[in-house]
Image (tube, rainbow over all chains, first blue to last red; front, side, top):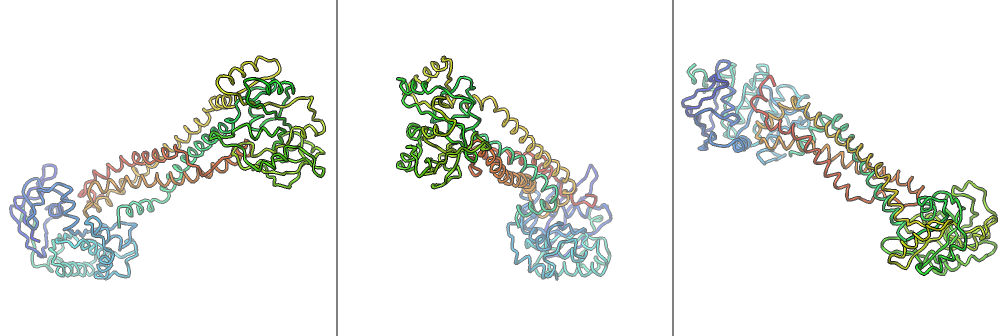
Length: 214
Length: 400
């Protein structure tokens, strides 16, 4: 699924954060999005996922201009086509690992416990399916988050500082896992990071600061 | 995984406050249900029991209420008699279809002994639907003959008198069975089918045999006469005429009980108002509990939205949580209310003879359940709107 951004502008309280004249991300690409603090890395992911709407410009995902969609349609688009991995994992407490993965399927209307089990198996956590997130290590929590992000068979996986809370070794394995599962599924991977060791493991690195002319 | 599962998880995570709020709803609902059921059944029970008796005629010094309670409901002591001649006059009165004498004053294990004639069982319908007393007519004839059989008189027992055919008993003086037992002994030869009236807790003996009891003399008169008129305006006229006499008074049981309940209807209404207040306060506590938790729910809601949940879905989750708490409280209250009805009804029934059902559903109960669900929707509305307005990006930011 290709992503095309044209003339995209986003400001917060009058301060320009994103200014992208043209950006074309090919299908199944694995890109690092980096930039200085405040360069709009998270905002960029929020725009691509439809969480935020730009002030101007268009974002087209596989021929569908999501910037023309209403909020409910953007929600549906996100539920069906986007997977998100956060720096702080954002797993729901009180829900088991398996239930957290099932939550990733709920709003796409394709709840499939067998697939959720298989995903947990894929990230190496089959025996942890019944455990609550607070009983897992941070690395295991991020693996559950990756399984959840893949639950709806997304065409785009957005990872926002996925190794920010992990030690270097665990971070390396998480990045390896992310790249692997995205390659297996033909999923486009956009990974926001400012960690050099993460950037080194990707061929394509886009600096948002440069892109926005700052 | 479904929205309901998320709701149940949310409730389980706040187990203590969820349980307390649902319990407070349940208590309020239970009181409302019990008051409604007892009020409806008491009024209906007294109305049904009063139905068959058009007029009761008793001594002047009784108040109308005491006369009715004594004659129809077998409550209170019998404070006096009317002359036998008054019964004869009534029997012969052109407006009267049937006049049945009754004499009371004794009891057995709390069951009132009623001395009367066989006409008592045939002249009146005991219920609005026209039901008559039912049991074997041969037994009735036998019992009402009042004959002495093997040294014992014969009696017909009400369905809830605790007596069975073949049982023998000695009546005691008074209504609470604490008086001295008379020497005469009766044998139960018939048991009436249940009527759902205080007569179920009475024991009927022939009036003649009643006067065989030492200290009971026909010359001292009878406790009351139950009158059935020939219809039209004759009942009103007869009642008026009787009330002009110096020694007797006549009362319509239905009118007396309607006036009685009219006077005291504020008591159940007060209970209802207090219970409703409890329910409303419980609704407010649900609102406060959910509203106060909204700041800590901001991130989970934002996560759900990031996973693709629509605004309407997160609104529904909060509303469903509030509704689920109210529904649990309402169902619990319904069960508890009927349990209360069973306990209080048994006590009331024991005193009045009016049967109470703990399983009968009053139509108002459905309105109560509807009202509680509406309360749940209202209590959850404001927090739900907060959830609806949650900004995903703000909710996911590290400071949230």
